Length: 296
Image (cartoon, rainbow, N blue to C red; front, side, top):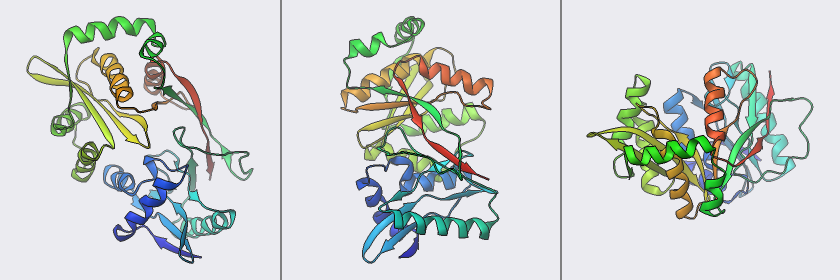
């Protein structure tokens, strides 16, 4: 077996591995890892494992300060073809940990991918948490019945207040509004990638327009017939209930089967984080486990 660092020339082989692996999802892809390098300033130490002519492992590995993590959260769990490949990958991760003086290593699964987790290695600390996932194969009537009652009035009022548009062809307005809300623009590479994903079908963007300006956007990542509620900048209150509901309907109409609305409350979350989790839970669905482990 040999280690192959993830470089641009190996990105197509890496992405092909993610595409065919049952546990692979968008967070594993080389372009998402490139986004994290640009957006969060991480160092990409990801690598593949080759056994003869076969690719038997793909390990997403980002270094942020003294930890292997993704925006401070656990990394996507490695995609492996065998236990032997797993042992080999663990040795390489340990080597890189010692080389870079890493004090924290954390990995997680994704509810939108197929994982077979029977037990968690006792050498790792279990830090798993739930995430809210909505089944879009249900009828519109069933989906609407699952929406929190107080939201239904806000959705109807929003439809009377804002015009709603599919904004795949106008991502610059989304980037500008995100900058207005956050006080700075994303790195140009991060913005370019988010715009490119709209063209390749790996994302969907809806916007709310009123009085000659854009006031809110809802951006979802799309992969393997699943979607994730990724970003939602807004300058006003009230528009997001309508936009999220419209995103649910738009994704369903395109044949998307599941939408992950987002993580639910975890120990140590701020009041703001808990409020966001409560907002997402108001659109129905069920909590699914995000299996996560950490070593310090």
